[in-house]
Image (tube, rainbow, N blue to C red; front, top):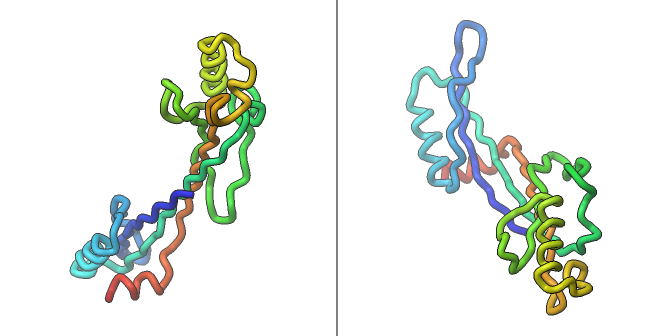
Length: 157
């Protein structure tokens, strides 16, 4: 599983009796960048609150057989882990000229084309390894959660 962690900094101000969202930074990839954004926000006298959000993207890859591809059209929604949303599900054929991430329908089409190109050899789509291509299911899950106090202490250090 690949895991990427980024942060965003949101800045709020008071407007009368209400608190108003002023802006949110782009995704920041390092604690040093977060410290810099927080430090700049603290220098502004109108800032009433600064909120940190941690964004986590998890990408998993699972080898599957052609028969494991979902039916024609869009696949049924897949439940996400607690607190996450399934951002995308793609398919990839290792070593295929159609590199990149494919829909289930596109993966089926490419596997059929590979069978045609290989003269219809049995097992081209179903087997992985020397007898056929590896078919991968790639799932992207995004999480966004308020940064813990531990993170803000770590950032202030």
